[in-house]
Image 1: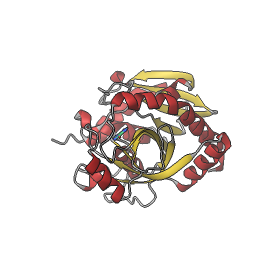
Image 2: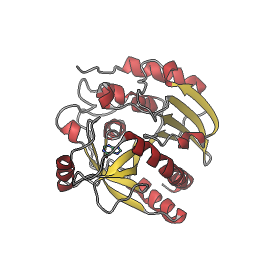
Image 3: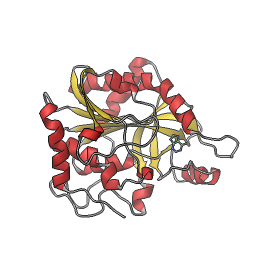
Image 4: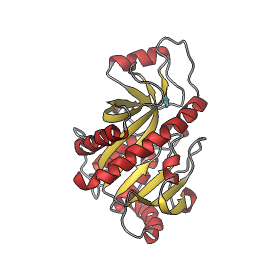
Length: 281
Ligand code: HPA
């Protein structure tokens, strides 16, 4: 059953955070599985456990801590979500995306969203990063779009455009940052599946056929809501494993978390590089 989120609930969550902000953060950052280390790099941090924020969904998954970390990175105020929830945990899409609504209510204009993903593109290796150029909303196409239910007119229109989900200028800055740091940054299409079971070889061959480069279980709901509310979005996947198109290997959550440790330093470098360049965007 759907649980929709009301404007009043969003406001209650925002008011639990607002008094603790020194200024309005310039960027909200969502950290994916095993990528929590970025939150440790935040300077002068204020930490707010999710449990202290009304209506805020709490993750049940290992590898996802549950707190907001608000402070500075590269001289910019950021609000980092160390841990996110997923549809497969049983939350509704509106609950999964409540944090993005709260960011919008607080006046945060930009969202950087990260995830751990499986490589469907055979050129990708575990440990690589992929900048999202677009996504395939396979779940939303078939029903559970996070914007289903009464439209929250305060945030955006009933039928929002999604032609530029991932901000071209932010992508440009990310390419520059990766080049400066000297690592390869792929670009491609991410698909969100419901999970929690990983894909069968037939699933993966299907995904490859329809143009997918990386597969995961998050991000698309948050980005849909971010765009509805007019935020500029950058998305980055950390490739944690190669897709098992012929069924010869198995995929485990432990593997995903171990790859996160390898990718986290590069992801931190990339995010820092983009933040440093933001004045130019
Ligand atoms: N499939 C789906 N989600 C994932 C994967 C995968 O192979 N790796 C990390 N998240």
